Length: 486
Ligand SMILES: Cc1cc2nc3c(=O)[nH]c(=O)nc-3n(C[C@H](O)[C@H](O)[C@H](O)COP(=O)(O)OP(=O)(O)OC[C@H]3O[C@@H](n4cnc5c(N)ncnc54)[C@H](O)[C@@H]3O)c2cc1C
Image 1 (cartoon, rainbow, N blue to C red):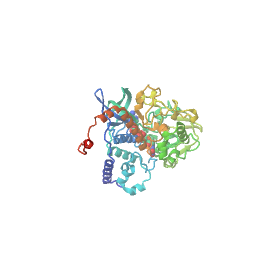
Image 2 (image 1 turned 90 degrees about the horizontal axis):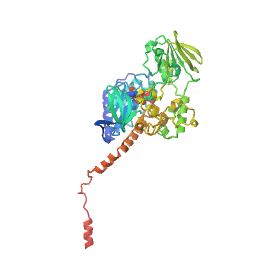
Image 3 (image 1 turned 90 degrees about the vertical axis):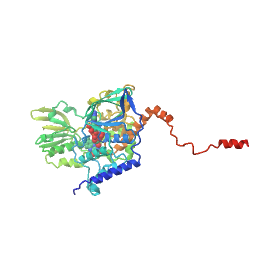
Image 4 (image 1 turned 60 degrees about the vertical axis):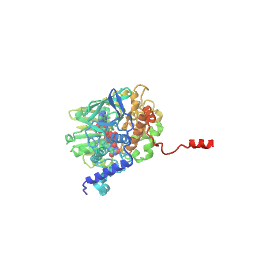
């Protein structure tokens, strides 16, 4: 059944949202004292990244009355995050009913946005959310909340200036911006970059790509393609290559068996959302080590999207030992023997290796990670990705490796996937992003209030608007004296 959107439905939803916000007295009144530094205005908070997490964080800040805020994103408007850039799945994996970044406001959910335009019948018949439609929803979310986002602006550096943070920006806005708090909502590649296996280092980029690269799939027509990995991105990249007419696509999967159970999603609950942060470190390690060991399976639909092609093959227990280039393309030594390909796609994920990102050069050596004493061998096997994870405080703030070496870290909040080991999955995926934004903003609000405590106390003393005008009662003491004198 084809459904046409009704703009009137969206307008009605927006009116309802405006009314709900008014009923809830949101946004709260601005309360953070203005700051200047050498005549230059200082932001209360700068958010880097206006993907789903950056938008949720910015919205929560504004609703909490922290309004001197700006979010920058390197991508042009409507192209933030993976959804219409390097994501190659047809639909989201997540169920359509998740309340995502709605921050507890029913009218801000994907479901409200969808049904307002296409109706309840269309909602019932919707299976999973098409990825482009999820992007459309995020574009609306930003618009309807009038969030202060500036696109095509890249943060290129961070430096301390007294007790403030100076960030360098380039692009549609260029220069230095001073801020009291910095939120890094920089996504899956978070603080690092693409995780690239050693055997691909040094191989000509004409012969391979990372799954998050901008890949020219048309150029793979008729070619022999290998895809490394068995995750969602492996399947979606393989399917895209097959649909573009690749001659053959081999899935090279190191594991003996395909992961088939989505463990952490399976036990998802408000207990997990709010509880992980408060667990002892050994328990956090245990949860995420087990999840890393069991791995997340690719979605069934993505796997079928590959296997329905007769020229797709799945090789399990097929580790890659070495890759060489020669006149015939790529010669890949695997645990199953040598294989030949024209092109390889590494769906090998992302890393937390800060040294990969020049904009974090000033911070990287000072950031305390789990390997700096938080992990002990009795917790479980030492996994590199987890050891590199930053050791964060209660509001996602970084900690210093050596106390006193980089105090601004206490004011820089890591609101991205790299926070998972410390905070659980509240700053990356759709299910708990509102809870994450709430935790982040409560922490920022409390620390800004504490930092300005003298001003707030001075305001308390200076406040002199009477509630009582003095004409509401009569002092009876003179009467008492009069009676005593009789
Ligand atoms: C292919 C794919 C599919 C996914 N599907 C699902 C799903 O179905 N369900 C689910 O729950 N989760 C899914 N996820 C996980 C998660 O929901 C997404 O990664 C989501 O985009 C996370 O939002 P984010 O805001 O943290 O990061 P992003 O959406 O990646 O946004 C980060 C933003 O930061 C900007 N940025 C980074 N560095 C800078 C800089 N220096 N200066 C300025 N801007 C910068 C980037 O341009 C980007 O727009 C998926 C992830 C991927 C990669």
